[in-house]
Image 1 (cartoon, rainbow, N blue to C red):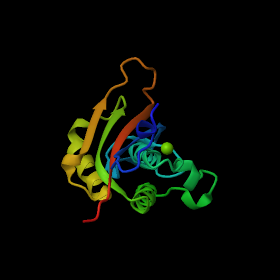
Image 2: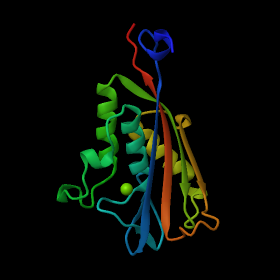
Image 3: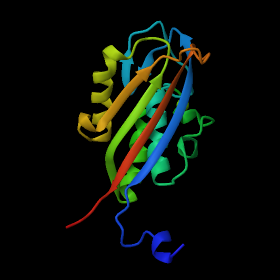
Image 4: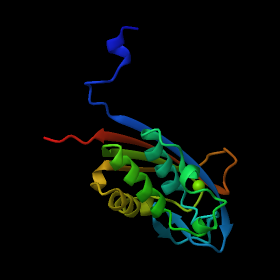
Length: 170
Ligand code: MG
């Protein structure tokens, strides 16, 4: 391959990131998705608040700058993160993204869960995530589907893709 094709110097490269997470439902705990508390008889169990969407988003942001994953910075063995608000994970990832010289162009996500229905909450989740990222809601895609026979009815799964744009100075 010619050197000019294998090098990215002099080219302003956007960067993509991808994250995935899953958590199991447990009765009697609050359900948090995208920082929003959704009324439901069960919530997502985890060392932190179990926010599957914010965990996948954190991994996507870190992956886009090749900076490890959520466990690198917030190990589940650390009691400090017990019951933690997952927004803190996203904020830390955003700080690293900023330090690397990038900002969020847009994100897209898919949630997979049998219940509750996400449709009625999608706009509120979009708003919450946009606020957390400091971008317009139009830059945040929130989609949801049911598992349809995948055998994961007692879990919630989230996939997130992000596009980072290089910060340029005039
Ligand atoms: Mg998780």
